[in-house]
Length: 232
Image (cartoon, rainbow, N blue to C red; front, side):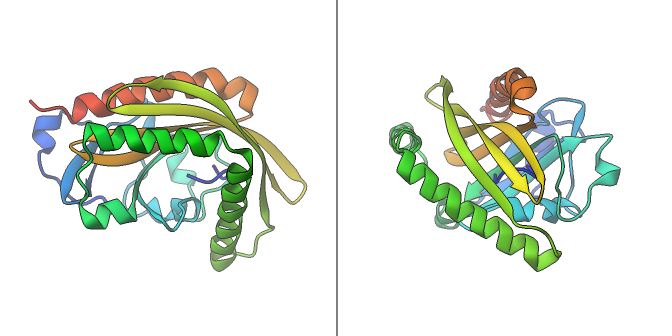
């Protein structure tokens, strides 16, 4: 985002076994090391020094694990990160992270069922959007004098895929800041890896032109994350 909402990366455990690239990231969630491959090789993990640039996008209930931008954009990344056309972030629930909650297949199915219910309830979706917008604005004002961001017309576009270990859906919306209005499209993905639950997001500005890219990237990235964390 710069346009919508979305573990400290320190553990290097198992890195040799996960066949990671230098631009990939390894995070720890719930005491477990999780590999997050780079979504596309034209992207790179922003690294620990610049990761806080994305913190304003992360709701307080979650913790940021990784953020990826185009490699060419990285030298120009500022705090806060705004105005980015395409980027990806990975988050984890603070609640399940701190409790080291074991996510079984049955629990994952229950979580997906709840998510489906939430995105199917327009009043609940609008309430969540309003709360997220307020939090984003408060975080932005803490780091710079900025115009309020408004997230409007958030609309679910349907499920992309659903397996025993992953569930992804698309949504689009309108993000406004001052006189600037941008349409965005995004994929939200729930992934069960190493009996932990992570949330991956793929964002693209200008919804119509980014729709296919977001969907394809979400599908391929999910397969790569699952493969990188499978037992070997």
